[in-house]
Image (cartoon, rainbow, N blue to C red; front, side, top):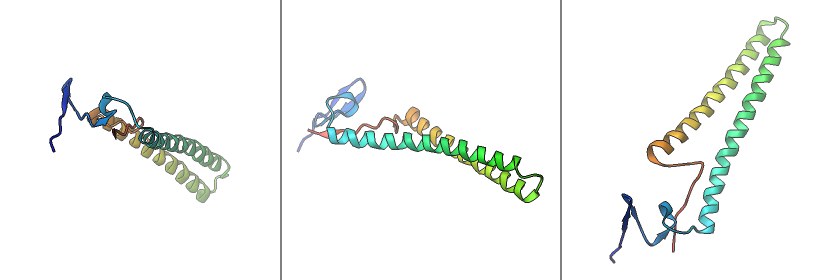
Length: 117
């Protein structure tokens, strides 16, 4: 079996797979799976951000209400440190997604799945 590939603008296109790299239409099932994964990533970033805000404020309130008790102050510090650590991990995830998009052209927040004709 001989496959014929097309070359346009320096990219190779397979005429059998439509929708790949802007060469044709999309399949409803494949695009909905890609949209579902992208929406899941977005929701997890939002939930993580809200979790950081809540946990940070809770740690600050515990610190304020500790009343000078060293044990309670230490627990409050640990809550704040854990919240900031979670935010750093969330920002690292965003940096990895952006890196993959810029360097390799893999946009995890806008996934496209090519489908055969």
